Image (cartoon, rainbow, N blue to C red; front, side):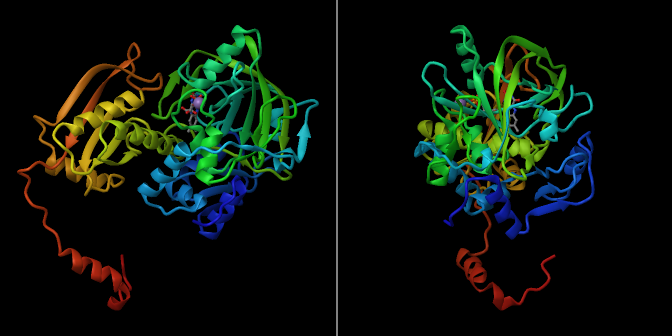
Length: 456
Ligand SMILES: Cc1cc2nc3c(=O)[nH]c(=O)nc-3n(C[C@H](O)[C@H](O)[C@H](O)COP(=O)(O)O)c2cc1C
Ligand SMILES: [Mn+2]
């Protein structure tokens, strides 16, 4: 593995070398236009907007897709490599290191704070309430134990120093906020924008309350994540973050958000959400601002998907030791549909894998189980397994009224029907027709010999 950095700039340097950056030199404004360009940029390269009207701050979009993640983490681009890498972070967490020298503190603003003056907050979807910050990670500390928590939450700009924060009642940040309120404290947060892809995925890991997600990022990097102390709050942020907003919850203040997009690509109305008062902003010299296109766009899907499939795989493994890989599909909104492969499954293990996945994560509502000869990140291969091996009268089961996430598109009283699809080869399956394996391999090994020039 090659040495990699911990910040977004080092990821961008690698992506630049690998020709995975699209540059937008023409001017764009923050009022839907930037979002519309980002949505229509072809391919999955990261995009840098160099000329954002009214700002000298360049904006980075589409930082994370699966290939960009692998390249910026110095791992190969297979599904297995990313599962192993993220799993290593969870299995071997490393305590972060607070350092004095922090690029994120090169500029410090604590007087006359005005978020929009420093940060080109953008509007995304037509019926949403206003400008959102969509790529911030929220760092908070348990007011009793001091244990850190990291998550991603969208922030709606309400005023020069006021932000509404969207947070599910089932997430840890909500618990910490409630805990603080009960003991009469206002929970402080640091909001770090412009982070390394590994840090973004770690922030989305489904782990227990009290498990500091920064330790997972350290575990992935194989070295402690460097943090910098807060200036106006007692909460650290990644030392290499581009921009850090420091804030605290305003007790009892709630804001009626109206319609907001979810990962399923539709609007939802979550009602009232908490409000933060901004106390300070710090940033690097010449900072980049990062945007994640929310709703039904691939970066929003993939950051969550990579985190959820890794922890789902861990959970399934406790029930079915022969599980090989797990993959959350994009067609399944990066949250809802999981494909799992099993090595030498015994009768009924497919069903157990499905139950374990549902038990692990409320968001998962369809699990397809295949053999380990299937590339589960290839939708055509998975559909082939369904066509070739799933007996519709025996291999589909539906579990009605299972507890689900508030973000589920079909949610009704907190529940939804879930489906398991077992597409496993049985003893009577026809043999697979294959070109002799050793010939396939020999050909691969001597590819140049064939002087193949037109591959299209
Ligand atoms: C781009 C992106 C935006 C997200 N926005 C929100 C949000 O606004 N509210 C929310 O509750 N979860 C949001 N999430 C999901 C949470 O960050 C995620 O579930 C996280 O693991 C919760 O962590 P916690 O339980 O430690 O608080 C978002 C995820 C991504 C990838
Ligand atoms: Mn957490």
